[in-house]
Length: 335
Ligand code: SF4
Image 1 (cartoon, rainbow, N blue to C red):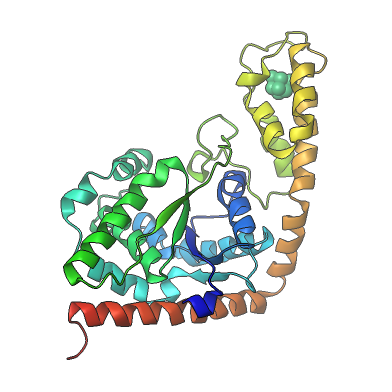
Image 2 (image 1 turned 180 degrees about the vertical axis):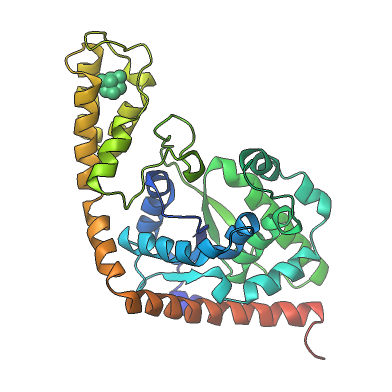
C-alpha cells in the first residue's frame, strides 16, 4: 500500500445518492474533502447500497442520483486524477466484506447504536425497519476497512459509528489473530453547520436546502424565503444578527462582510430584503464555477462514464486484495 500511495495516509468517505447535493454538503463535507486531496490518498464513494437501504421502495431514482452526486463531486473540485471517485455497487467486495464482518458483529452493538435510533426517528417518511438498515454500520465498517483507510473525516455526531467500526475491526483482528484490518481513526472536521432556509437541519426531505447546482432564480427565491430574526418585524426595527440564519450564511460564505452586515442589522441601517438580496448575489457568484463545470460535465456523458469506470478499476484493485486476505483468514474460498 505504501508504494501505491507514496506513503500518504489513506482516507475514505462517501455520500448517499439521494439527490443533488446542497450547500450543507458543500461546507460540511465537500470543501474539506477537496482540501484533503493535497495531503492524503483519497477514496470518495457514491454510497448507493446505503441509499438502497432507505430508498428500496422507489429504487428507480438511485442510478440518476448517483450521476448527480458524481457531477457535484467533480464540479466542486474532487479531482478524479488525484482521488478515486467510485460508486459503491461497482465494487462487489463491499457486499462480500459486509457479510463477513456481520458474522463478527453482535446484534446488541447495532441495536444500541445511537445514530440508528436517531435515523429511525428522523426518516419518518420511510420504512427503514429492515434488516439492512440495522446493519448499516457494518457496511460502513466494510467500506472503510476494504481500502485499509487510516482516517475517516467525521463530525462529532458521527463518532459513535466510527467507534462501532473500530470495535468490529478489533473483534475481527482478535479472533483471526492476524491484525490484517486497519482500525480507522477519526479525522475530526470542524465545518460550520449550515441550517436550512427554515432553520431546521438542511435536508432534501424538508425541502429547505439550497442545491449547489441551483440556478440564480432559485437561489434568490430560496434566500428570499429564509427565516430571519423573528423579532425584526418592521423595516425600522433593530435586528439581532446573532440569532439570524442569514447572518450565519454571511459568516460562512463572505466572512469579510459579516461584521458590516451585523452592524447594519443592529442599527436598522438596512432591511432584511436588502440583506438577503446581497446574500443571494454572493451565493450566485460563489456557485458560478461549480455550475459552469456541471454544465460541461452534463454535456459529456462519456467523461462521466470514464470517471466511474476508472474509479471502479482503481478501487476494485485494492478491494480485491483485502478480500483475498480476509478470505484466507476466515477459511473461505479454498484450502
Ligand atoms: S438584516 Fe440580515 S441579519 Fe438582520 S435580521 Fe434581517 S436578514 Fe437577518
